[in-house]
Length: 290
Image (cartoon, rainbow, N blue to C red):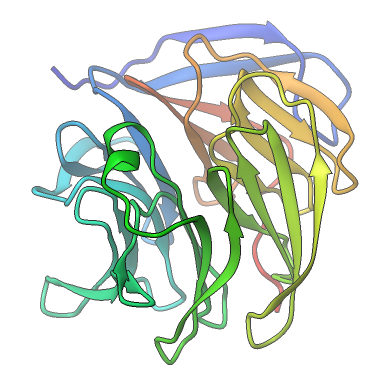
């Protein structure tokens, strides 16, 4: 049974841009199966997926939980474009879709070079409409994949699909720097983060390893207004833009993904298997400035 909780945990450590001290981890909701893909809407609510139940949920602070979409196609990662349209990685249907004004969805990507995508996992949308997503294949998805690689993909505003990278091992979470010029991708199998420089057309160059030796399996990733990186792994590991570990927020369940939210963007929402957590910070999530 889904429910909102007011249970609060206090621990020692804090977010980037603060001295070490206490932070509060609150359970905002529980009773789920495997949460993923949180994204904050300007309309004042958090959207996230519960993969095994095939649903997308909406959490409104002060109001509670509701189901936003049934039969979600195994929805995993979510993002919102500048027009408020929801872009979703439908892992089970092996495609990326976007909500439309008729209450349905339009398919943005489902094949590459004539072959079906593996299982789109996480997605981010730049302010100018360029979409970037990862396409690994975990578990049974790996047995039926048609592509010979695990991809990091780009969808242009015109709908053109290109492969930024063809990895031999699996990518997972994806995020942008505050100015939208650097793309970050977590590598679950290798326990590291790669970075790419992006131009105005969304083309990627200068692939490099930014972070190594991550504790736990790195999954979702986000950035704050200062460009620091927040990685869902064994807890939430916070790194500087240069890749230096600043500190770790401990969560009682292994986090899967995260997103900054609330009107001031100073609450970090964390999806962690069966529970939705939130942590108030002193720094805002990144808002693209270009």
